[in-house]
Image 1 (tube, helix red, strand yellow):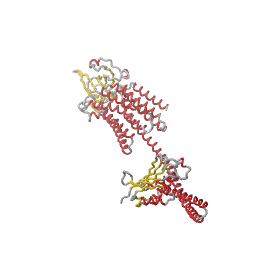
Image 2 (cartoon, rainbow, N blue to C red):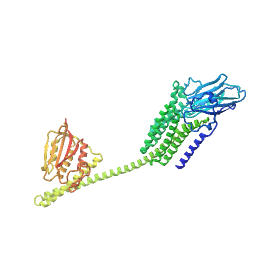
Image 3 (cartoon, rainbow, N blue to C red):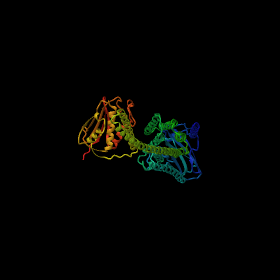
Image 4 (cartoon, rainbow, N blue to C red):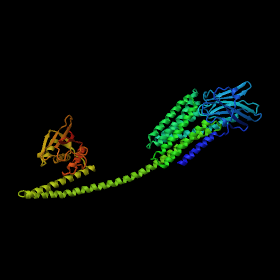
Amino acid sequence: MRNLLKWLLLLVIIGVEVSNVHSQQVINHSPSIQADAAYCQDASGAMTIDEVVNCSFVSRKDLPKGALSDLTVWVRLTFNKAPNNQTAVAVSVGPHFLSSVQLYEKAAQGWQVQSAGSSLSFKNDSHAKISGYAFQLNPSNNSQEIVYIRVYRSGLNLILIDVAEFDQQGLESMSQLMGMGIHIGAMALILIFAVFNYWMNPNVIMFRFCWLMIDVLLCILSGTGILAKYVFDQQPWLDITVFHWLVCLRLACWVWVSRAFLQSYPLSPWYSLSCKLIYSLVVVALVVVLTEHAALLQQLLLLAVIAISVTQIIAILKIPELKKTFRNALLIGFVSIDVLTFLTIILAARSFDFSYLSLYVGRLVDFVTPLVLLAIFAFRSRLIREELVAVKELNAQINMNLEFEKNLFKERQILFDMLTHELKNPLASISLAVNSIKNYFAQHQDRELRRLENIELSVKNMDLIIERCSLMNQIDQKEITPHLQKLDLAANVLSIIESRSDRGRMKVSLDQNLFILADSYFLKIILSNLLENALKYSPESSLVQIDVKVAQGREGVVTIAITNEVGTAGRPDPELVFSRFYRSPFAQAISGSGLGLNLVKELSKIMGFTISYEPTVESVSFVIEMPLFIS
């Protein structure tokens, strides 16, 4: 990373120094014409041509460095041509966004003035052309001629001057137009590719990238004068304003796109705040455009580029989740774009060099920015694909483990079913044997009879536990289906109560003629479990209240409420009372499996009933709600 920063710093220094080198000041396209230029600054902007002629002209390298204010500059263009060369001379001045360009040529009657510039209508100005302005100089017998060009720089300080024979000037214009067409065509193709990519695979990065490319393409069309010619012909001032706005918005779009690459990672609040401050800086620059203070505009843009670079570097380095390769790709890509943008602004602001260095660097930025972003996007997509492959492999492994667990669980269920079946037969035999022995000892041996009754009770409890486990197993496998039929609720409840030996502890309140749609076997299991719990966990001398009635205020709903007093086991936890294997801490001394209430809830759900637990200080109630059957 240190080496990367060193190379980037060296690149910036070289770029700044290149901007100060005194290279060729006038592009001469004709070997028969040699031209040179000298400069005079018009700080007030009010110098007359006669004052300019007497001005002390200097070379470009002697102009004040960093002249970032809205100065009017006079250019003295001296060109020598071959003797008796009567060919007209063409002088091209660009770029298009220069506000005012006036060429003064000495004639017998005085000074002839040709005016052009972006402040004039494109179609009404005969000197306007795509990317700049062309002036024709009348031929004379003099081997050396001097003309003066007054240039008012609106915005970026960039001036391009070409000198050629008039008949060759058209060929050079075609060459410029071809280069410009390639530039615009390349940007348009990248935009089309981005839109197609977003259409095929919508994502936030490509969506924002499309808007960045739209801004870049419009900026090129505006800066070359194409919009001025075909869109803003009657409002020439609007084209230059739109151009500068697009330049400012390009920085905002760049921040917007760079945030899209990082937003999937956890970012510090300062990063979001920094981006908002940069957006605010861009908004200020947009307002400055309307005031036509080019110096302030250039300083704001330069400050924004520096702020963007620093923010991006710190944010990328502060994200620990970033892979090292992707972090390096982001740093190299983002910083290279920032450095080229910085150089473009520096060259345009500091240089009056009449070569095409600034223009070429600007075009380089236009090409490099989308290509670097697309390369980062492709690299990110490859990393995502690799992660997806890893996730798929992990999912496959998890699925294999789940399948193994599923098969193991199924084998355990089969084993459980087998054990349940094998245990029930011996228990049935034991029960029959106990009944036979009871009949034998019924007349005389009370002590042995009580022991046999205890054995019989234990067998019944074991059989009940096995039955509950078997039902839970069927519920887990979703192999249980209710056989619903019309039932007389009161008759079924009384039947279940009468079948119990402890029915003397039950107090019943029944409404007659209540019919429901239910499975009689499931209903018996539900009521038997609830009654058993109520009798088991309440004081031995207390009564269990059973109420069967139509729900108060709810027509078409019937309820069964089973209420008992709170015994030594206390009240169960309302959050856990229906959980499988749950037992209250104070109920451990009382035999039980913890399956009964869970089984009641599951069977109620299967038949479309609901069950609720309603505790009070002195009692607990379990209430079953079921729809009343109406034929």
